[in-house]
Each structure stands twice: as structure tokens, then as C-alpha cells.
Length: 199
Image 1: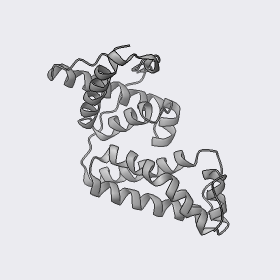
Image 2: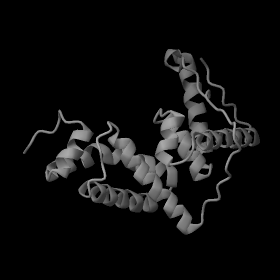
Image 3: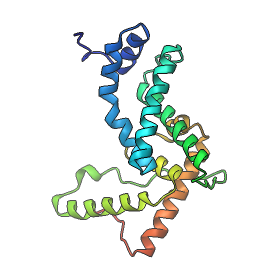
């Protein structure tokens, strides 16, 4: 069996295009958990997540075989964008999501402190509890808002990357973040949650 350990995802994709099926098996093994976690986080339903995950990989295979992939150094982002489009199609078909689009000029850049890595043990418990509360609040957000929060703070993507992956403008992704934060603050206030991290 060929050793793919030194190959990048992009190189594996190109090997698969050239007919190396083992390269695709390696791609799947490397990316399935991360991609499934992203999908499940957005759709919040394991059955739907499984369907979206399977459809994503079918489309990935189809697009690779059709030569619709060029090595840009961002294979996982390319795959995530395919998954995002399938999720949005699923919501459209179910008419389950009503998206409030933001106005122009929304700007959200700072939600988390950069010094979180320097926290001391005394504050670790408080911060863990705050992050748990934040995750619960995120669960209650509409899918497009939950998705942008996940991409920004769990995948550490820029708003430009989020906009590219979700096929919207930067202003729309910023607006979704703004509405997500407003909704989370409202819910936190309603439930008397303190969301300040101890630095």
C-alpha cells in the first residue's frame, strides 16, 4: 500500500483525479471527522448531518472526477463550501430557516480576548463554564448565524474566508455575526448568564 503521510490534501486530490483511489481513501480518513463535526454543528440533527455528509462526499467525488478542482492550497475549505451549499439547499427545501439579512456597515471583529492562553488555573473553571454557556446559547441560534460563529471562533477563519465559503458578501457574514452576538446577549440576559471571561 502506498504511503500518503507526506502528501498534502491537495496533492491527494490531484492523485485521485489521476486515478489513485487510495489517495481518496486517505483524504476521507483525514477529513471526515472534522467535516462531519462542522455539518452537525450547523444542522443540529445527526440524521440530517449524515445525509449532508454523504451528499458532500458524493459531490466532492463528482467534482474531482469532472476536473472541477484546482489546487489552491485550501482543499478543506473547498469541501466545506460544498457542504455549506448542500446545507443551505436542505434548509431551502424544508423551508425551516428564515434568515434575517443584515444592513450594510456592520462590523464585528472582537468577541474574544487574545490573552486567553495566559489565564491562570484559578480562572480556568470560570472560563470553562462561560464557554459551556456560550455553546448552549449558540445551539439556539438560527443555522446561518450559528455557522458563522462556528467558522470564526472554532475554525479561526477570517470574515473574508467565511464569505467565500458560504458564498455571501463580507458584509453579510459580518451582519450574521452581529445578529448572532445580539441574540446571544439577549438570551444571556434572559437567563441571567454572566459571559465575561476571567483573564
